[in-house]
Length: 157
Image 1 (cartoon, one colour):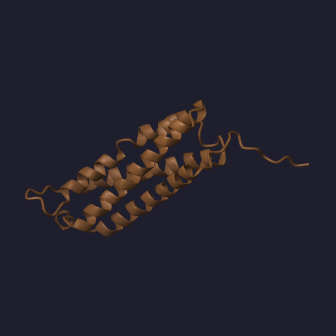
Image 2: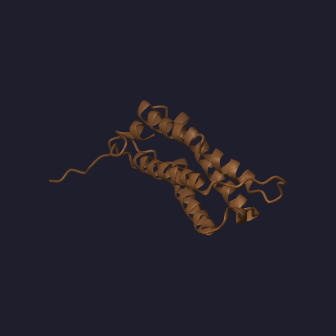
């Protein structure tokens, strides 16, 4: 007879975990949407409120994700959960800064404008997407109570 597989760990299946996974999906979507909108635009065409507000919306979602993960790490202080959630928090803590700083420079009301280095900024956006994709897989493992995908977390973050 086949035995039913039990989770390796008690799953973290709470509203904060679900919302965190949804925020990861939302951040990925918003970054993709932003990159499609600015594709093939010159740097001087980026000084629009809509681009600034899109970046701030992404930063807000990242800040909410950080807040929820901090709550989960404090609530679930078992070593296994805390170590994984803390590693995620450590890698994500400075991520919104690049978006906030870039949004500041894209403000069309600023008297002295600064061009955004597109290559560097796209590199930063791609790094955020990679982090979010990895974090999402770790959160899904914690959500399901599986140990798979968590062994090498410190190697990637």
